[in-house]
Image 1 (cartoon, protein in one colour):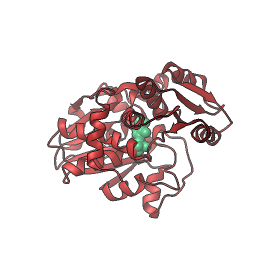
Image 2 (cartoon, rainbow, N blue to C red):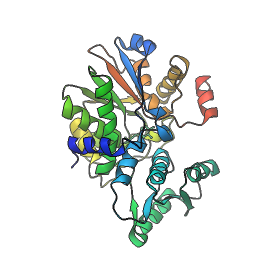
Image 3 (cartoon, rainbow, N blue to C red):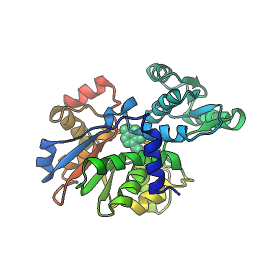
Amino acid sequence: MVTLQDVSAAAERIGDMIRVTPCRSSASLSRLAGGQVWLKCEHLQETGAFKLRGAANAAARLGDVAGVTTASTGNHGRALAHAARQLGLPAVICVSRLVPRNKLDAIKALGAEARVIGASQDEAFEEARRLKRDEGFALIPPFDHPDVIAGQGTLGLEIIDQIPDAATIAVPLSGGGLLAGVALAVKGLRPDIRIVGISMERGAAMAASLTAGHPVAVEEVETLADSLGGGIGLNNRLTFAMCRDLMDRIVLLTEAEIAAGIRHLALEDGETVEGAAAVGAGAIIAGKLRAEDGPLVLILSGGNIDPDRHAAIVRGEA
Ligand SMILES: *Cc1c(COP(=O)(O)O)cnc(C)c1O
């Protein structure tokens, strides 16, 4: 179980490790949504995504460990490497041989070891489990962990502070650590605020699981919202039930709608975000999300996108 008290304790614990990110209004999206729209700029967080909140909280709570490990090469791996360095803990990020050089370099630049092992993500994950079992490392997962969820929840506390009259918060949704934490914090303080989860239409594991009534596996397909891919774990312990109980509505977007969100945020709002972070804007443009009954807050969850890819999308070529 995770509680509002856990989120408040996390905010205190990680206060020196994270940035309070700005929350700014968007005139163009407000026009399209029929009411005030705010952008919570978490793509300006240290390491470029909100994931530092959860990773920092989980790492800061550890007792005597040899170090921390995970098998994520995306935003969670970056965040964990950064948090470990802040805390003076060794970090080993396990990656497969398929991971490109630039991602390895990014992990090393954060002071972590990138351990290249095996030919698949599963084999890399096996090495992380071995480090835990045999070498006293703590394995910090990307979403389904109470300290990670509590850390992500600190984003919800910040939003309530910055936009006290918020009516709806739109949350990019993958494994559900972000939505679970934000919803827990927000509904604990303001039960009237609605939480809308947004995923891509293809390969959304949480959406499929909620429909099935239990965690299911989905086929992974390529998507512009690459940080929203991946499963929720067939043995999901926390985020499935929390999303089921705390989320008011789910919105699913096509690839074209996600691209439109990226493009709009770049051209109209001057914000460079990755696909996962553009789903709120994409949903407004697609007419799937409105702000008629009070201020709507979009979480711009991350900004880690290849610059050439971003430029091509903004030019309308992808
Ligand atoms: C991880 C991530 C998400 C989704 O978070 P979950 O906790 O897995 O639902 C959304 N946006 C970005 C940029 C991410 O890195």
